[in-house]
Image (cartoon, each protein chain N blue to C red):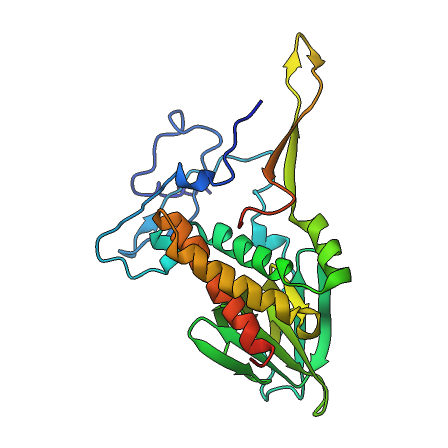
Length: 90
Length: 199
């Protein structure tokens, strides 16, 4: 299956200039805005009161199912979790 | 009586050389002469551009409207959809910003903070927003898009204080830039939640 590191945006770095960088601290550390924004969301979800906290857990997981076609037939799908249920920020 | 045939245009090709589909546009070029363009008759329509499918932009009113039209969306929920409100306060990265009807069109990036919606002179609804963007359009339609927006009442003060302490400890023990940034994000958001709860 696919090998996705939840922190995979560290691997693909486009246009990371360290010299005279006046960007935000997360950009300098190599995070994209999406990563930053989703991490902020996780921190907020982790601080909710009880009924809302459990409902929010369901929102956190991001996964994909891949199914390779071999000789014209789909093989059983492989589920890859991009962001596990507990979130990445731990 | 015999009339002379029309005088041939300058640079006109001879009849047998000119392809049958070649037509002359007759527009005057920049130097006043005639510009010739070959236009092949086409069996296809001209391609449509995206603007052909768009609704026309809303009219910008001459005087600011009485109320702001607010659209406040998160990916999993619609908090406000076309609601008429008096004012919205938005926590932008460049500082807190109040939006009244007639505000100059703006796009701002929001930091973790509180969006306060003033519904009608008395009711103020506060939402803690994790981050996102706010757009104010020329016709006083305000769009606020966030990843997480929770009413401040749904935040757990104990969990916030514990989270703040945890992330501060993680910052001290961070091994590389990425972990340091993750801890800083936690501190930033928990600190903002703390202030939102009044601590």
